[in-house]
Length: 100
Image 1 (cartoon, helix red, strand yellow):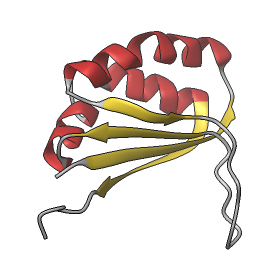
Image 2 (tube, rainbow, N blue to C red; image 1 turned 90 degrees about the vertical axis):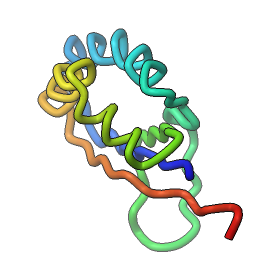
Image 3 (cartoon, rainbow, N blue to C red; image 1 turned 120 degrees about the horizontal axis):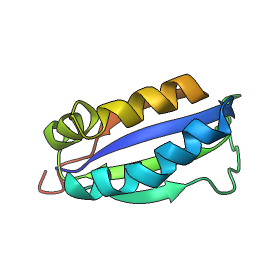
Image 4 (tube, helix red, strand yellow; image 1 turned 180 degrees about the vertical axis):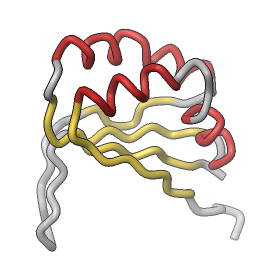
């Protein structure tokens, strides 16, 4: 079942590090069979108070594959660059099993 990595980039503190991140991250996502679903865009808040600033959603074939990407040697340096360059949040969400 698919899984999703969801980021909210709230603020960028270091544009140069984020440029390095953007230049390298797409290749790592593809290497681990991921694909981008959302990169930024308009957010229409319907309920509650949390409104993502710059949402990014990446789909992976499974939660295990998403973790393999996140913890990989390929993504590790990029992950640290993003962490040091931004105020952001990230989490995984497992999709539903459509056969159920």
